[in-house]
Image (cartoon, rainbow over all chains, first blue to last red; front, side, top):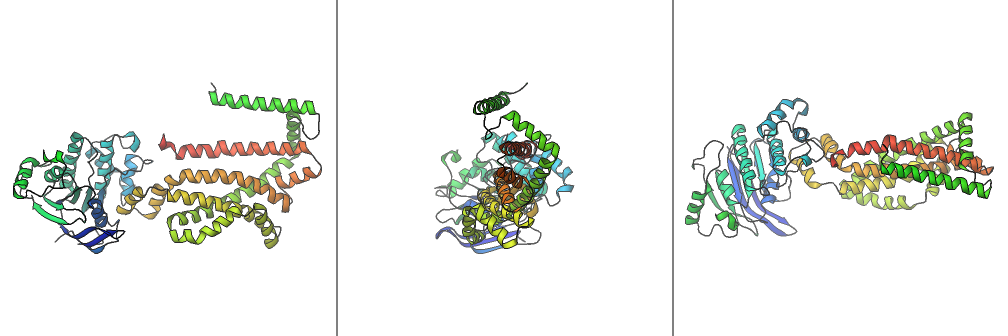
Length: 247
Length: 248
């Protein structure tokens, strides 16, 4: 049974259709990546799934509506600058008073042991994203939404965070829905990659990668997959990936 | 060791007092007593007890009116900033409230409710309330929507959202409303007391005015300035620095 089923017939801003005929199901524990060009409406799609945006035509069905927990890693860390790393995590937890041990464990897991009392302004960009990741995982989400969360980081830092993300999701068994314009990132992380066109955004191709081997906690090497994909669908990358992603 | 700004402040005070004393000595007029004479009068009023009791009575009115204006002003301002329909409803009343002269409100309160304590406090609070509401409304409008979305997605309970997401962003606006509010309330309370109360600093100043007792008027003013500075340095500044510590 799917964790969540999304059917968006139409989503428009000021009469302009942004999303059209999106049909997407998310299985428990799966990792789905949606790849599309910048400005296609990827973030809008995540806002619909997260419940931030309810002004659309279509349906959003959850397997167990009363129990669903959604974590969200935004493009920016979106930490409260006046709260310490620890308090930022505590803020979203259902029972903050009983969460001390869990927060310590999460901070240790994301490599921030001893930095729990630091304010976001005292942490580097990579560290802030680690706190945001710990915050998203703190609620033990059924579904984790990722909106290009590593796009503004340098590649080694981003890769470290991607590995951490894979490891944490494997530990907790949550499903992931990632939107990105970076096809390499999608291929190295996801079990399934959906390709979005733009104006309006609609799914034009689905690529299943679940059988492709990936070592525990490691990223998949996207080079071979990318070549194979290009050979089968020569036009698939037009308008989606930036030249640097073709590597 | 004293810092540069503290030196500057004491230096200015010294120059001011010196110039005042010189002017009083040169003019030799009852209308401009010197600072030493004013200090002696201040001491006399303190010993007699009238100064302390008047200041306490006024202070009580200030605190009550301040609490009422801030409480209702914050509530109305928050709702106006948060819900456009409430903003549309109250906007006209607010503009009217901002522009009606304080004296009109005071007179109307006394006429409608009588020369009683509650009318005096209400008149002051009503004068101040629109300014608080407008300041808080602007604060709520400026709240970072992206941070609010965090609370929404993670289903943070409303009480926690208000305390940890809204309030810290509103602190600068609340402090501005408190500061400007306090200064306005001081001024209006004295007028209210002058017009319709038989105690308080305003009433005493009215009495001194009838006798052209400028020395006592200045002595009371000095005591008042002392109270304002005490509130500013003991309450407002430490509170502000505590609430905005994260900015540094």
